[in-house]
Length: 465
Image 1 (cartoon, rainbow, N blue to C red):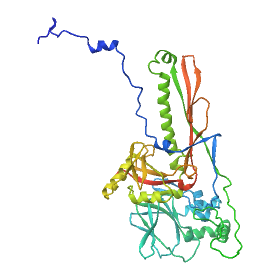
Image 2 (spheres, rainbow, N blue to C red):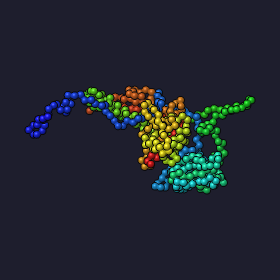
Image 3 (tube, one colour):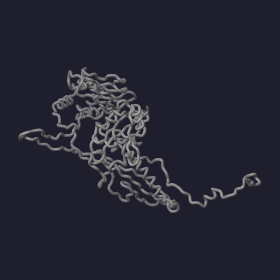
Image 4 (spheres, rainbow, N blue to C red):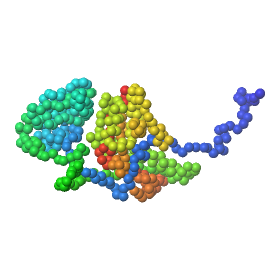
């Protein structure tokens, strides 16, 4: 086969080039792509309640506050102090608000450090102090039915024990507290407490009133008890009762994410075939708003799952790594656990733990997707759950959903002017003097936890080792 060459020694073109041919061809193209789209499982799985008004009120039975919340601290370098008003989280001081006395009590707490395995207090020794856990993890160990040691609870940052020790004399600890990790605690001795009491008549009166106050009738959830009679015979006088409600129920306001989309009229007029430019711009914008919605459902301070889970439904891991025992603890603390949400790296860390123990992590089919599961409960990936880059720790969320199930529900408006999708509208704002069209894109949403045990959080989950 011979080939013709020109005077410069280059082969002469014998057919039409592809570059020239493309000038006459119609290009096959995709719609604009984006890497920012995630699975958004939380938004997809939440049942959405459509509101006719802008708020959603959650009515509950009255629950008595016993001061079992977490104490907050401040630190300057390695020196840690308890915030005086936070001492009211201790049941004894719940209704005591004299700031000067609380300041004196706060100043008498002494900082102590413990290493893993150290005993903070030992069963059978004099109970003469109250301990606030500023940082770290502590195991509460008691005696089982057959005389062996049994872990009763795991306490972590902000927990405390026990105020009874400083208002009773000659009593003994009925449990042992042992450090699981390196711990920093603040300790108030009975002697220091009594010195403050001796100098404050108001605190003396408060303690006497606290001791004399009859305990309020409660069920195991802290709710006002309903008096009932059962197993009786004959004609005894039946108890009378009523169901008390919270007098100030929580109301959830709809939150929003907004942006202004701008498109030049020249683009909208001349470059709309074969794809509508405004439609494609709007589609990508809506994806970003929905991604931000998912982030807010997890992290928002007002209604996000991580910040609004009840303190009694937050559990630390036993040894840092996500262990099958931790998952069992998490899902058995509530009825009808339906979904588990975890960062993909946390799911991988849990799978590694299962592999080490020789456990096959099951999977279930969800709409054609194979989802890992534990005890039949699917574990959905959620990249919006944050990872602490310093400690390489994250959280894992378990929940049940639905109004009828007393679970978690999503909230959005029933109908909006210029509605584009559920809870989202696009409103034309006009054309300015630079011939730019503006659209206001708004996404309205929120979420509500109907009862405390609808959401549980496994905290301080290590994924870095």
